[in-house]
Image (cartoon, one colour):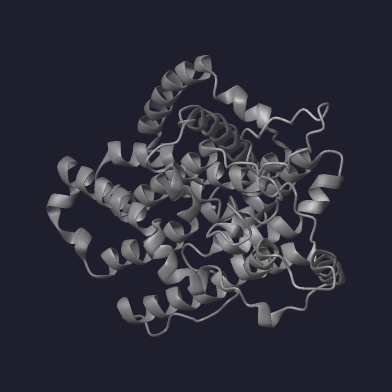
Length: 399
């Protein structure tokens, strides 16, 4: 969830000025009187767009499996494996592209328009959808109690705003893990702003802040890809064994250990174990993400659209009894549901859908913000007191 300041995914990418790691044009030889060329714009690395698209497809598939896991041990095992790494991978990439966030005025504006406004719009939309589609007139309409998917926007806002702090302390990852463990054994945190999830998923965001391009190169090596296969196979075997013995609620990180009926020390051990499993499986997942341009690479820029919109389809299917058909609970039906979820979220990431919902996902809202002195000075320097060149006028309009 990362392109330019006006891309559909600026909610996740607004923290960095040059996130992509692509080739640039070589410097020109100036020894023969040639003028140095202007630096070429850095290109997006298709690896990250591919990773975001594949992660959001797994998110949608995991949500579509939830009503099917009750009567199938295999489905429950697959559900556990996917849930152990799909959101950690998404959050890790979000942290990686937040490394340059310094709370500058332009970054804060993008944070408001790309995170806060979509949160308000979709929290209200989901609450009204729950009330009327599920015939639940008592469902509260509250911006303090995120429902279903909107918790991620709250978390992203909190994580992004604290980025300068994590970039300045000595042991950021260790501190974030301690905070997550304390949250996991603190039932008094409550449900406001879904802070349990915000705090328990925090280490993955902080880990993303600490990563460098060479770390992603390491997991993309051939030997890592080969090793990932037996690791995933072992994870499926363990999950199949654990399915009747363990609640998948642990993977949501939304409740404390005491709320799930266990002791605080068991909660700490369980949370640490899940963190380690998530980290390993996230690395295995990233090792198999294609590095080249693919047919779905461009869809990586629309993953926040797919994330927020597919929830209406998943919840609507439950409200309207679509999962009550017995055939859907057969192996063939489960495969059909999986494919349908993948196709639906793919369509929701496409440019036509982005254009329709851009008013809610990335409103421009120039009217709501004052321009800071630095921006005004840059505009004056570019204009030179006169009419701007065409390219400068285009750039100014884009902002």
